[in-house]
Picture 1: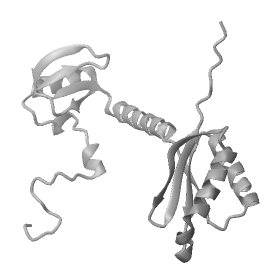
Picture 2: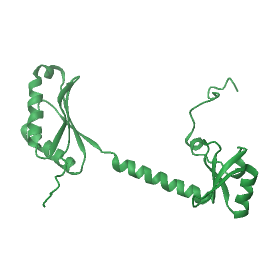
Picture 3: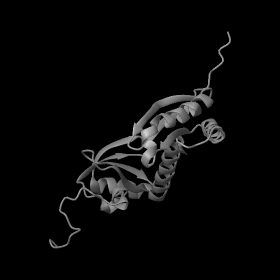
Picture 4: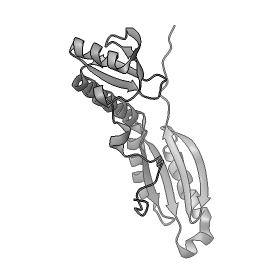
Length: 195
């Protein structure tokens, strides 16, 4: 087994199934556990056999909910119901994380972009900002265009001037390699406070 490249004693990397694994009834190996009822009432610390008997008499499972505590905390509950509630909590947290995540859109320009194209890009940026998204404006130079950087700054500044009523500049235009980048965010909506 020592020759196996995947076997590492004390491996800290666990699969998703191992991390979410919950011990139930006879899988719990601790000599004593703290027992809690479904409603949160604590029944105190019991030997593991006594705790299993309490669960059996109540027609429930003994589920380990805090394995790292000393002694481990176990709840008297229906295991299927417990798993269902855990999945619902995971879905809810994922949903909240998705809502908090602000999407960033990218608008690409070139130094040879014409004025009417700048207005079209500006309208796209305004649409993205109205949806609550941030926008990264990126102008890429190729070969000899780098010797005329002022053209890129002129185009980006005219675009920023076009969208100034709808945006807050998070990052002013700056060079990164052969690209001129700038990031804008939607303006905070003003709250009317009439007294």
